[in-house]
Image 1: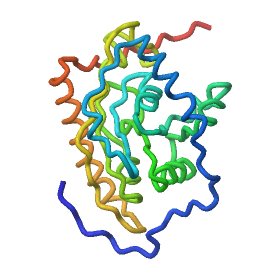
Image 2 (image 1 turned 135 degrees about the vertical axis):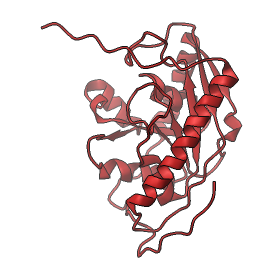
Image 3 (image 1 turned 120 degrees about the vertical axis):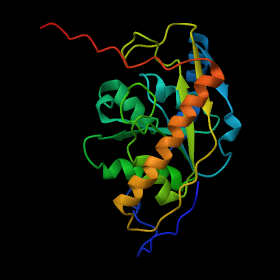
Image 4 (image 1 turned 90 degrees about the horizontal axis):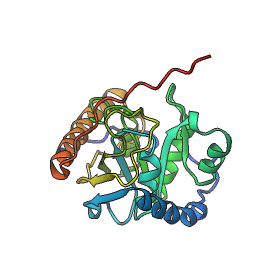
Length: 246
């Protein structure tokens, strides 16, 4: 991708993160391998081109979003400790407490969530790996649209964006809350890192939007290439969830 000149700013360190507690990693380090083992017992998981993920430094994993298992899968199988941004609605009850304890990031999708953004930047500024789903919702998984969060985070931190194509995490005829069948095959295909220029503050919306569209096209192309590589097609739009009778 071509590079552009940084926008002059008054404080390249913005946003400041001094108000956040030190990021804890020990609990996720302990549980992620047993979770990966359980997933591999339940499904056949095929990982492609993981060597394209940088071994050191900050990384943003940008994946298409098909089903409920996508986030846990990306975090569990990554050879580097990874933290995912997930919708606030699942951070309730025992599941929410567990996700928070494991350092996963709750995000309010209906407004600019400054706390979630700060948490994500903290992960990247401490050379961590952040998993995001630019589509914002579980959908067809073809990256027909993308939100600007991944690009904004890359502009702030300089982290490369690594495309990830997920195939098989939702099967045709399933809702987004259903798990793929036992012993079905899931493919995780990594792509070449995308470099977005790092910008000082302020970061203009029009520039974020322009780069978001550039990156979206590359992510969508990667999903197409992954289908050709694996022979597995996207499952199509999800089946509507059944309406509960009152």
